[in-house]
Length: 236
Image (cartoon, rainbow, N blue to C red; front, side, top):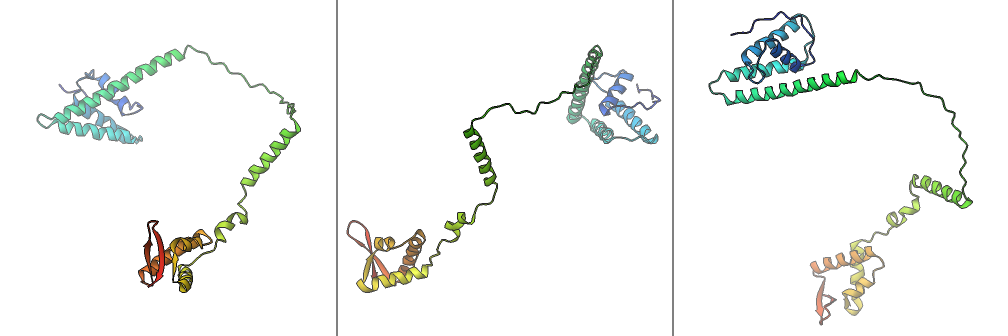
């Protein structure tokens, strides 16, 4: 049996689920076994009437229409497990939506039994007199703390960068000259003595790099001296 067409007065529904529940209720359908073919026909007919009446059709109504048409299409296939799964999902959503409507109605009926009373706020005159007592050292500490906070908001002074910006840059070439000059007289120097002769960390690093470059260019040679692993620098 096919459902009889209903002449709608174009009721306003909150959403597609609300419309589907209305169709199921009016046609006394079994929500647990929805005849999807007939439901699609009635649903799309209502949406079409909304468009003919120049009513604004929300995108969610059109999305549901596409969903129902897809379920109908899949249902036409023989032994379609996908169609049954899609119908079960739709049934679950409808049952959940119906339960929410029932609970909302009960809460509304309960709320109608309460009366709401309101009262205009009273004007209160605030007493701005500061009544706390503080020792002089507390006021001094508070003042110093406030000054410190204000100072932290200022950019750091130029002196703070003195150790970074004004640090002397030592070139490797200058330390090569230093090493060659230092061994020109005695003919040898220990590695540790060359390092100790450096006045800064930059000089130490530059000295080490200069030594490696001299060894690579075979201008000096390094040899072990005894068990203490002392390195001697000799002119090659």
